[in-house]
Image 1 (cartoon, rainbow, N blue to C red):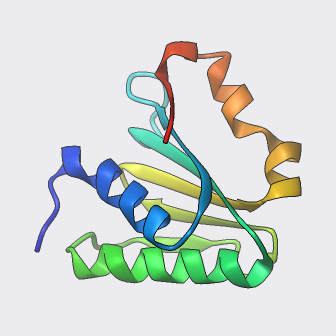
Image 2 (cartoon, one colour):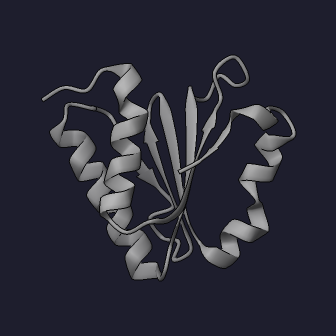
Amino acid sequence: MEVKKDQLLKKIIQILDDNKAQNIVAINLENKSNIADHMVVASGTSSRHIQSISENTLEELTKIGIKNCKIEGKNSDAWKLIDAIEVIVHIFHHEQRKHYDLEKMWEDHSPQQKILI
């Protein structure tokens, strides 16, 4: 099964939700950044949960034909990044998420684009 570009964001959000990620937020980056079309920020409850979410998300993306995805922050207990080409996924421990506050940073550039899931 292959996912089209416009369905990728929805699929990633579904995978995160299925893996019990918390406070999932999608931010539209189209025409605002060349790193990706969307950024998704989510929280995990523990280092194990964050690891599990990131590994399961990568596995599910591979199953649906999204190639060349990778996880950054493999040695971190409090943060992982999944580069799914058009979508960048950040999975944080709650304290790290508050510290980096990516939603606030991108809200300043595009307040109407923030979508709480």
